[in-house]
Length: 411
Image 1 (spheres, rainbow, N blue to C red):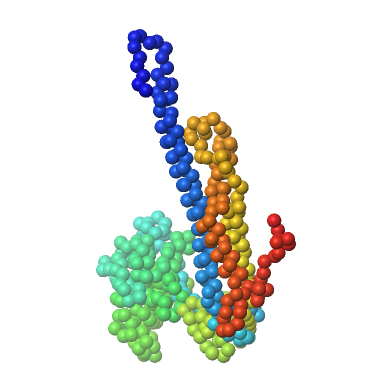
Image 2 (cartoon, helix red, strand yellow):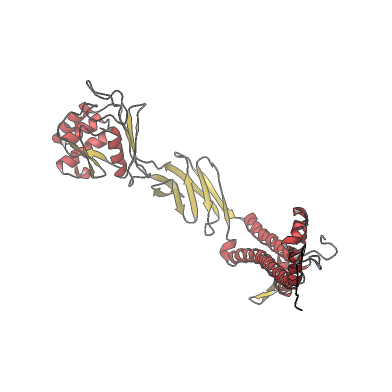
């Protein structure tokens, strides 16, 4: 019906009139918004169920194969010497173990450096140059690290030299408090050790000033300069002896070198070596922590019955949790008469009231849901069913797993 207003009208509430005219349309809009909100909440409820069921399915999948039950545990007679874990294919029984050597990383503690007379540096720190250490040769020298050359000169700073060492695959640092350079291999074991030497006379002088002349670096330097492999050096020759004697006079006496070393164990009398202190032998993973000398320690391996029991128990606990959750959703109290609130309805309530109202709806969204009931029945039937394996029937009851009766179960 059309509305006509003629003449002068004062005090006319046009907003109320318009609101009354569109109220029917607004009711339809609110109804659709509430349905949309409810559908969104129901989607979230199904996502919660799906997450729990998928987690249970993933854990069941891990239990499908016999390897899941081939659990072993080990005990060591002296766990201060080694720790041992066993995989499923480890042999049950007692084995003997001797730990002869532990793996070491190659390490070089440089000799103590000092500033030369007339040095321009005020103190021995990373900014001090080789010239400050007394390296006053105009021509630069060549130092080798693992066969790679580093060029040094009087203007080379200690920090710069250390950085070049690190670029060649070793770990190097300078301790200004003690005036020493420290160099180590990045990994333990003989094959991972490093070598430092010089490839010319000037490099030898630089090594001496830097406190890096040791018996090993002298030998490496001789091999570099003479063009002979270190393995082929005739250490008994007069030429080599004269070279070593000459270098010993200029060597810093407090430099120290530790060669990289492999770990060595004897398991049941057989010898095994490793660049690290970890060994994997016939299903055993052995981590050596101390040597045993000529003494033996024992490793005892047995089936981990408790571990298998816990796996089955954890699965059943998760299954019960999922089923109880779905049953609580299916048997939730009715929320008849409750619908999602509009903004106007929320404004007339406190936050706590709104939260309780919405929670009432959310907990009932899957009440008597047929899809959820189908899932529950499928899971229950699968757990109660007997399965034929090689002509024999097996069920959970075969292994002593059962459900309590209706009157003995908790509410």
